[in-house]
Length: 149
Ligand code: CA2
Picture (tube, rainbow, N blue to C red):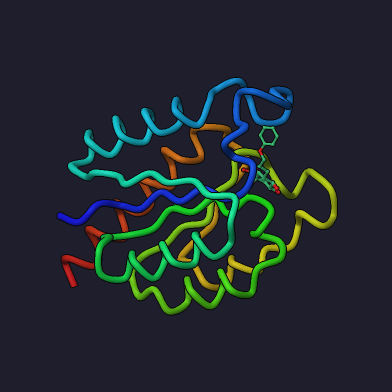
């Protein structure tokens, strides 16, 4: 079974180190452990990555076409700006979920717009680290449904 790619965008490497009031006190390593444990419980594995560079994220989405069963992506600020990520996700041809730690709809107006939402199966936001767990559960449902045909 190919892994689920869990992709993280800019500044998420700072998780747990700054702004705990918005993003909580878990580090990205803690998030990775939660994802690994939850995926294992569902019979899945994860390939967990973070980059501050848009091109890396686009390259990883291209790689996922052949090497992943599905994509969970917290694209960070690129969510609100990146046509490149939109186009890459649209072409990925495997299940994908956009996720956010915070409820972006409760925050500044510029965070209410997602350029990637139209290119993924669904969006989860506002549940802190549990957003990652919920995204993996959603992908498990999509993968299982696709297997049944
Ligand atoms: O809520 C989310 O998961 C976001 O994707 C986080 C992004 C933000 O630009 C999106 O609008 C919503 C920001 C990630 C930056 O994370 C930090 C963590 C600690 C300290 C500073 C930034």
